Amino acid sequence: MIEVKNLTKRYGKITALDNISFTVDTGEVLGFLGPNGAGKSTTMNIITGYISSNEGTVTVDGSEILADPKRTKQKIGYLPEIPPLYMDMTVRKYLEFMFDLKRVKLPKKEHIDEIIRLVGLSDHGKRLIKNLSKGYRQRVGFAQALLGNPPVIILDEPTVGLDPRQIIEIRKLIKSLGKKHTVIFSSHVLSEISAACDRIIIISEGKIIADAKAEKLHEVLSDERRMTLTAEGKASDISAELNKIPEVLRVKKQAAQGKANEYLIDYKSGEDIRRSVFNAMVRINCPILEMKSGDDSLEELYLKLTEKSKGGES
Image (cartoon, rainbow, N blue to C red):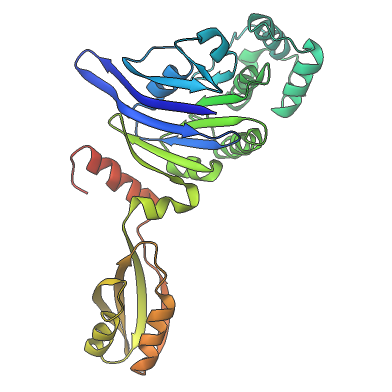
């Protein structure tokens, strides 16, 4: 559906995007994650045709944004970080105005009624936008992006400034959009992205540093996993037996807990060593009291990875 190829954007001597490439499949909800200033909004502005790139191409459903901008833009609904709303209009009048501006060909009243219902504005159609809460203004922004039923929806930081309840509601709306649209959703908050998206791209300093399905992100961010084992027995025997497991990288004894000791076991990402650890303890007759994952959180790994991409310490 969307193909971004070798995209580069420079502002004088500053390179905002450095030769990035990715694709988004039809019906996929893609999370675009990165710290502030990473290049997320620049990428989205190029995809939507608001700004041009210095190098590279963007193709949306077979149309290239620079070669055929009018046709390509008709396929995209865009919600910028600050929705472009007319505060003195009612919700319905604003959507009618945007309907005409976009030259949508669908039946006007029926289409606007459907979108108002979809985004949860059925009881707010006659209210002035300036009298709505930030969460409901965001919904109005969603509604204008959906006018014309574009196959691609691009959302730039749609949950910024919302309270926890509003964030949950917007997250549900984004997930529902994925049933009929291809969605790109940007944020600098990992929990927002991982809760709403099928796949996540992490960008830092204008470069893509990770690209993975949401459930596989931990493996992509780290080439190691960690387990915490609490077991009774002679510490030297336990460490020696654990180190015989091929997938184990290192074993470190922690503080004692009565007759037991706690061990941190680092092992290769993508492996499951629980059965091997259990069998190893059976062989040396050392009872296991507890065995659990001790990985860094996704947030910690994300911070380490983005700091590393900047040349900082990880």
